[in-house]
Image (cartoon, rainbow, N blue to C red; front, side, top):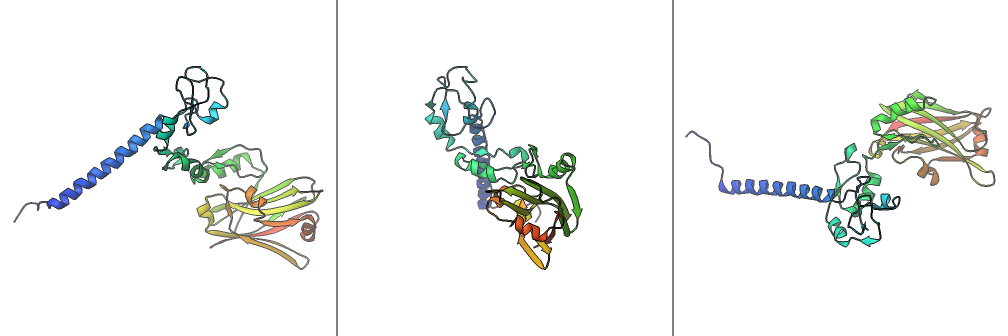
Length: 282
């Protein structure tokens, strides 16, 4: 017998059902996107989310822009404090794109989940990781190292899994930061030693390693910091933090190598402190 076998009727029905389902999903996504566009702020083009206030003519503006305006940007009328309950009800049934969509995030979320997601979104732009710097740069992960090399040329980079991080003049008064880069395993790690003034002139040192990468990538590595001298040894081992997290929260929670000036003097040599740093894969 020649010719093609016919498709069984039940299979054909399944194909039609699948096609109809995909079409419905596509239609629903498109409808949600169309509805989301109704919530665009006319000033910053971010989304106007509940609680939603309108001017007397019904025009909307987001809360961030509203606090900076004296009149409605659309009709120049009074902004007032009129709640738009209908739009708030619509907003609860709309999925909004993550604000980091231009960096590659494809998530669509209800407005109550949006802020929490965006705060932890792996696609959000990276900030300049230099501690204590007034640098306001931010951008994609692959641009962090070029930024550091161009704008922070004083940072030294050492190659290898085991290096010595030498902090000079640790007796300098006030808050001071020492920063160095370590390259190994085709990754870049930033070593930070920070001295802070605490209370009554008491000073503390905080040493930590962070990866120029995401939290997920950081889970593949471990680091060890070690102070040696005069038959003494002080060691700290941990997983490096991602530069997405930064070092501020780790220092606040003492989740790093912490020691005071009296300990520092036990290991210092002529005012310079050497910290052995070892990076390993886990």
